[in-house]
Length: 151
Image 1 (spheres, rainbow, N blue to C red):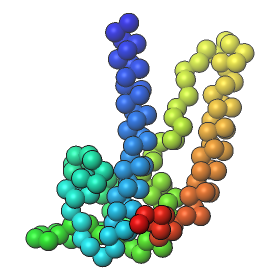
Image 2 (image 1 turned 90 degrees about the horizontal axis):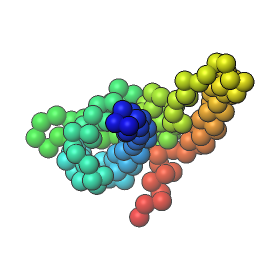
Image 3 (image 1 turned 120 degrees about the vertical axis):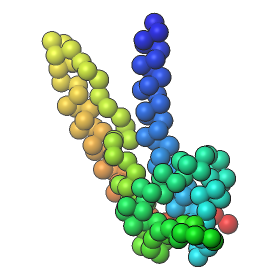
């Protein structure tokens, strides 16, 4: 019983981390776009998301690799968008953040079972189609359009 609970907790933690990174990064990018030319500290951004500034710094570091964010060092330093909000698509953020499928992994199934030996192939196709649909939708929304919802 202990192993099952521990394994279940591990899977839910991985699923949570995979999904929270996207919302965290979109929040960071939206806040930077909303504040326009202001340089924002990771502490300020973290207070908006209500998370630890170290998590914000980690996500900003990743977003910088994709030229979505730039940072200014020193006194009065902080973070800005790497390019205009109208040039950043939500799909750009999605691609920068998610290294694994948002829908998760498949199970280790029994190859002797008529369903078990085939299901992972069919699930992978389903997950791939669903993710492509999501990506196509996000390719139509710029960060500039997204922030228009915030007043």
